[in-house]
Length: 301
Image 1 (tube, rainbow, N blue to C red):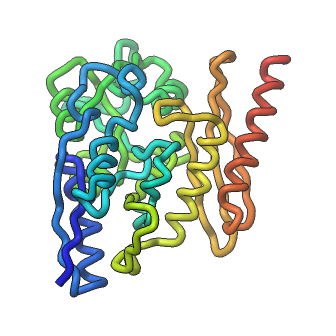
Image 2: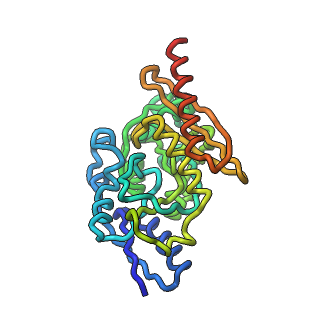
Image 3: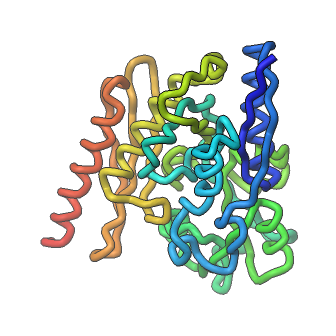
């Protein structure tokens, strides 16, 4: 029996995500046994500063990258939204799992309702500029204050601190079995998610063969992820930039919705493109270029 070692961050959610991949591999390939090896990343250790201040979301993967390169693990499992747009060529994304709910959700402090967010003085805890920009239009009375940490840490901060509400990814709460605490779901038209949200990415070493990943790969998720990441990358959007993208596939057609923020104008816009799903990256780049040109017209108007 062959043994496969999966590297994971130490958080409860990260381990559950690695466990999902473990179960899929072992179900598809009974002759493979999977072990999960956890490690604490720099991004998990530094919680008193924003990601932009400490180097971006790459800090959530660099320890796992090093372990892969040193052959201490065979695979690493990440939320695709946490994987930097620029990845080490030696460590490609080998597979993506079937996408779960890509939407963001609202979590309210006990005793609060959504109506409280329409009152002056209400505070939403989030360190995501992407979320804050869009939430400002939904809740113009709210103030936005940075909040970082894993799900359990954020829930503790919500109940103990000055926050009225916070916003998290639906997929993470579903994997944790915590859907009952969700106050409400935001549609992708209300709050466009981060590129790759709801998808798990499996990273490995270039040039190696991974036959046991057959049965784990989901074609639709991989195509959607490529389109979304191409859009963000074409806009030079790092993981802390207020850029968002969501692709939906219907038969052979891919529809991509993207958000672009123009720093100079302090304005953002959302636009949509559709085309052949086999042209996923090209569609992402085309939408990005179109929105860049339109931003140029914002400046002249």
